[in-house]
View 1 (cartoon, rainbow, N blue to C red):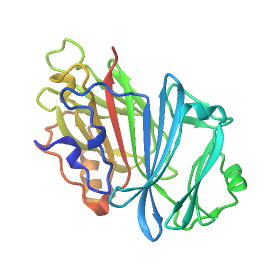
View 2: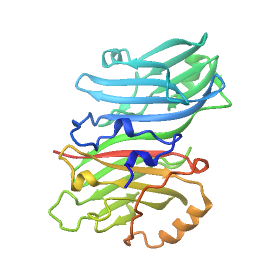
View 3: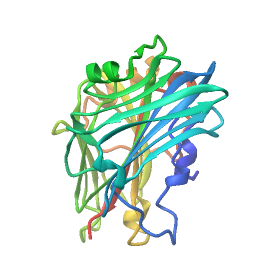
View 4: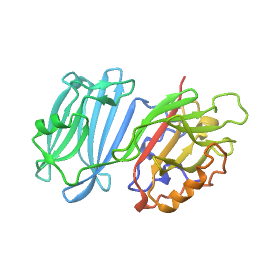
Length: 302
């Protein structure tokens, strides 16, 4: 069977560098959320990564811009010591052009995770245009930066998040631009003494996927419907069942706009709680169908 990270195309989420399922790898910080946006810069496609992390010293923020070959163009790190100011800006020169990064978290609201829930903005400005704007304080961001809205605004293409639990692993997910924010729950009894563990995925408390006989189906993929549109789910729970105690399971939720997949998922989801046979390997996503990817690293609580 192919390695799990290899099932993502070059425009999908890159998880090989963050894969925590390899044997002998020490447990990384679970307080990390990475959002990747695609945009146009200097006439080329680029990726902007915003990384929220949390350690014993406090919150940290990193903004990195890479070209299409994943070579770093520029990077801004806001260490936990700088978070005391809660706002600031950085200017960088790239090919004699100035890129500006602004942030304001002075009234940001945080939950248990490293990513703010609201009351903040992060803005990336290039040649007076708003290349990327994240957060709910949009008016304040435009006033501070003096930028104009870009006709080629950045688009969120992937999000990577570490979650933990004993049997239930939950997060919030927004699969479509300006779409509804859903409660996403993964439930698995692999930690119990059950001889036949199962796996369930719930969206807003509704069961949309169930895998029985998980010891035989520890890797696979299946298409569900969210907001009436198809989302393909990939899972790899090998480490939960057979791996080291420090290993995590990995889940990917990939949006797809293929009419064929939409038709197939409609017939499959008529009985979402029924079991099915998993495919023998992960398929390469077709590039035209790529949309948004949510990758979750699920860790067992100690």
